[in-house]
Image (tube, rainbow, N blue to C red; front, top):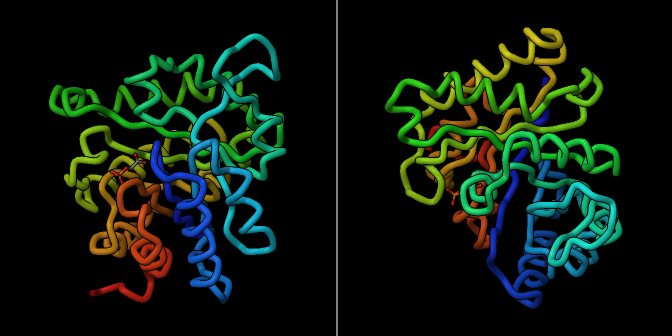
Amino acid sequence: MVRPVIAGNWKMNKTVAEAVDFAKGLRDGLATEPVAEVIIAPPFTALWAVADVLKGSPVRVAAQNLHEAPKGAFTGEISAGMLVEAGCTHVLVGHSERRTLFGETDSRINLKLKTALAAGLTPIFCIGETLQEREENRMKTVIERQLKEGLNNFTADDISRLLIAYEPVWAIGTGKTATPGQAQEVHGLIRKWIAGQYSAERAAQTAILYGGSVTPKNVADLMGQPDINGALVGGASLEVDSFIQLVRYQTIQGA
Ligand code: PGA
């Protein structure tokens, strides 16, 4: 049984003061241990302050990106060691905005995933097809390529230390969620791929999150699918009340 995961990706939003307010609200709002593992990904500038507020709470802190090198002349970049020091336990790798707006390739993502694991961070490895790829019936090919190249040279032990997020690019920030059936189809495919490359047991233990216009209204239906173990949420993670509702999706099941 995979523990469900609710992760919030704030993208380039919130000042340090706003982030700290949110973190306090979340910490106090989740007074009892939530059923789901809860992760928030603030911008770099707020990581340390947010992690400080959440110390001793069940909420984990993720960065939104990292550089693959340990240090050096990489102006504007942040290393895995810096993220660990700032209090991060997780890091998003290969988000579609990084792929499309910042030119991240599958091979670069592979290096970043390895670097994150070596530093003891849990990567949230993001994959997903564009609308055009879906319409041209290339979804399966694209997803399998992203898995194969992103996880190139990964052992079963490496796989056990990461989370996968399926985020169809056409559903991110658009208000167009994949239907639970569409999402389940791809999640099933991802799990089958892991089973084929590694083992059925490894596949069954991998948390596969769905992302793309998840809201408190649709989260329960998505989470009700057999191969959906969590949600990676952008827009609806920015307000603490909405995020707490997402974390408590079980209480709105059937709503
Ligand atoms: P969204 O973003 O929930 O605003 O669609 C999801 C993501 O980019 O992770």
